[in-house]
Length: 69
Image (tube, rainbow, N blue to C red; front, top):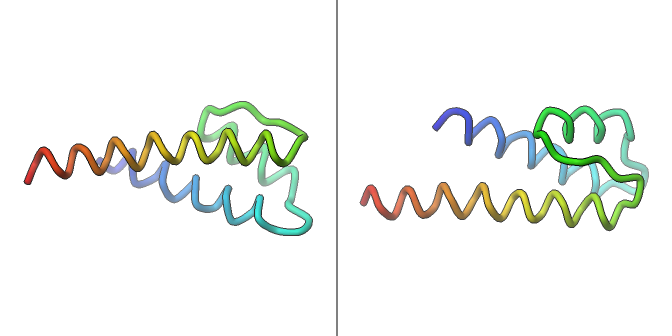
């Protein structure tokens, strides 16, 4: 469970950074490497990759919580 929480925190940091007018390439590269996702110079491609990853992380944790209830 802690692994999912760490991934959610890193994904949130990455989204926050990508939403900036001038995101730090180094921070984006670091966070994508930490999360095991591909890095892209194209901001739209990068955001799409991040959002897809967020969708799978949050949906999995919500499903697990529903099953435990």
